[in-house]
Image (cartoon, rainbow, N blue to C red):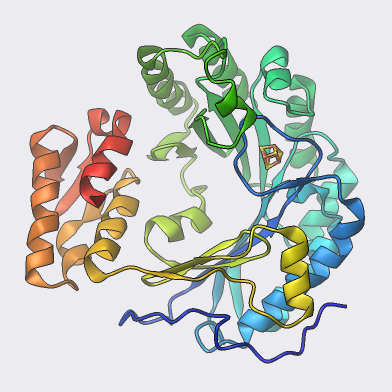
Length: 399
Ligand code: SF4
């Protein structure tokens, strides 16, 4: 039985040496690691099958919510966004989502929160989606990934192109007014014109938000081991695909607001925005990541280990990382620069000592000279070229 009455261990919440007030709204992330199959590109923490562990895992999540709500760093803080991520949260029964959300509402003040649930397009029904809506989910993400049957198969996905189309219709029928979709480009065998067809097909279905991610080879995945055999598009083609996404989506009224994220006005993801604005985030569940001001920690990446620790009243967090002022400020710049609105460098750097401020300003000025950033008074934002080379730009700022 999970233990939900234990006092919080002093080691459970790492020390934060920040002076930043913690009375700001909080993002709450709940990780549901169960998946129907193993996608060969995926480096998230997930398990396949393990049906019998799902209910005990939900109970463990509920215990951790209560545990963290008693911690002085989180007690009484308003939860502004709730995000069910995975894994495949749409394998959760609506009753389980309802129970988890009730537990969150009992444990924390919750305002008019954005409540997101990630889903796979197959396995959704109108009844199931209506159940999520009744439970309080008001934002649904559909993991479409591709509009090509062969590519979906190559990605190890269990759904079809028809499922993509149907999932949009079902979401609309269930009354979701905020529907986000995930797409991937730079896939094996994919040409620029293939990607144009796919993104146009997606835009035609009228999503409110699109995340378009380039496939990356993550260590430990099957794709990484086979990367020499995959016919991946070259760098120029990938750059063209990146720009094409913005062009096609803009025509459909869906504008870029972050490197990989696009939305109709008013449908930007509040949960991720909180992260890009360096807001605090509490991660619940196996492998879930948290950050409070300059302290970051991750829960154990082990389903059984997580549940055992919760049941025994033991900490589930790995040792924390506490960033020094300069690294924290650099990370803050990096996160803010991901967004199209950019950063106010003066405001962001105001809290750090003058010598560190000078070093970071020099890095911003160098990026400006390289043509990676635009400047408007204290405001900096990525140029078109900077967007394409964002990883290199951020490396320069962070080192
Ligand atoms: S991509 Fe999503 S569905 Fe596939 S294994 Fe990873 S978490 Fe599971």
